[in-house]
Length: 613
Image (cartoon, rainbow, N blue to C red; front, side, top):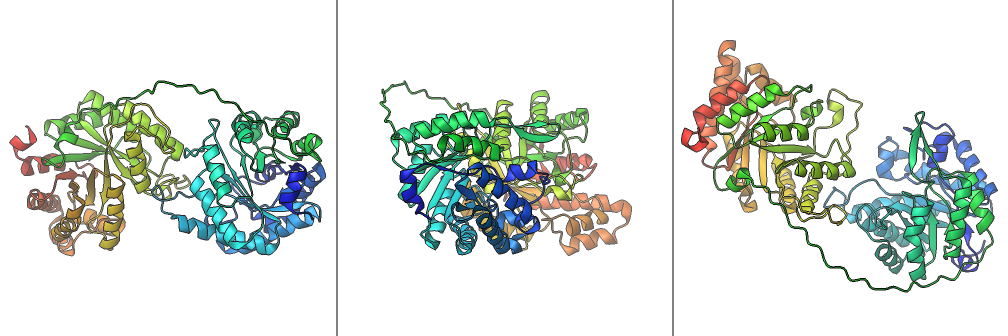
């Protein structure tokens, strides 16, 4: 077989189309691992490769797009990593024969890099090396790194591949209709940088259909000498009778294949939603054609007056007070239904007692409740007290997180508590999925970007937001050093204040305050009154992050049942009185049906002059 790079200088090659969506079209359930079919149903994978070869494909991709240890672990298949990749190459080679190039398909890992996630750049390189080394040893002709949204991740995969072998590498990123990735990486800068660090061929695939792909890549082709691969989706997907379908016809693809050919593309294929009929249509106009000479663009410089968006500062008494005076916040759970009259009345009473802000929980313990954003807005609008919106990474993907934050800002919410969120499987809908596109540190950084007027991809959002961002920490953690390290990451990301989980041990608080003094950040300590000995045992033994000293639990056990609630109240009051002068605030968490205890605690621990009563 001829050298790929030399061959591309002589003629344009036809690549195959979708594997995943075509497997679904063939009847594979959408919740099954596509790459596992290399072992489970190799005949089906072989038949698909064979169809593409018969349709005119000169490059076919192995069914290994998500066959990395991170993605396979979601199916508990990480121990099959080597077999899945090896079989993927074997099947493709058998289907393609001697005259078809077999490209080892390497897709994104589906995790976020620091500072938004837990993976480092070196972690990514390591995972990519695992997969690519198997593909190379199994005998692929080239590597295709595809559908990558992050330039950093593309670099990690490319460096991994080049450290393993000298095989040609295509790096194909996926761009939105504006020519940028969802992380704001521009097509020209991204692809040129990848070429500089070793990519043999660069390209664009997936996300958008032929027309929008053409609008993105043709300007690049007119300015770049780089070998280029283009593989658009069959338009945007839609749901018809419960099935996902794509609308772009083979005839439509044929029209755009000619456009890509005439503008200098070197490899033309297709991506999600396509099948061998699309490949056949492409081959009819592309196969055997020589590469076209690319035409330069002449630019006319247009100078636009710079528009500056002024930051909209929302007045916040809580912001002005925190870190300077003692603050008092109380947690309030949204209702399970849509009637929030009782919550509003409790909020009014708490405001009358001088509470500075109400913490509005978001589906606490993964139990379904009313939208916390909606309730926070209603409380502020109807009562006039500020809220601290608990905002988790659990329930939304990156798109949803950013959309909801913009909505919260428009609704006048000023304070956010950035949380990971309890896993969905422990809640009342255990089949619900936890998203966790980013972690808490990433969420804090994202919110701070919003406060600078930029989204996560660096794109302008208009007027900057002005959120005050809190984070959680646990002074009673069994591994305090790890807890402090994590808190330091949150502080470095831009956290403005800290709320702790409910605390009962004075020595833990004193040690925590000493250890966190270097962070120079307000610490608001959580306190939940104990209603009974049974309540104390439940919290200590079943609720993650809460530790109650044995002497307190024994004191409650020894008391008569009718006295246990009073003793729990006394413990909370005494605890607050002891720490009040050392911390920036108190965060009261009511036990179930326990707001009367909260009112009693406020009355006995916060002086009337201090609380404004």
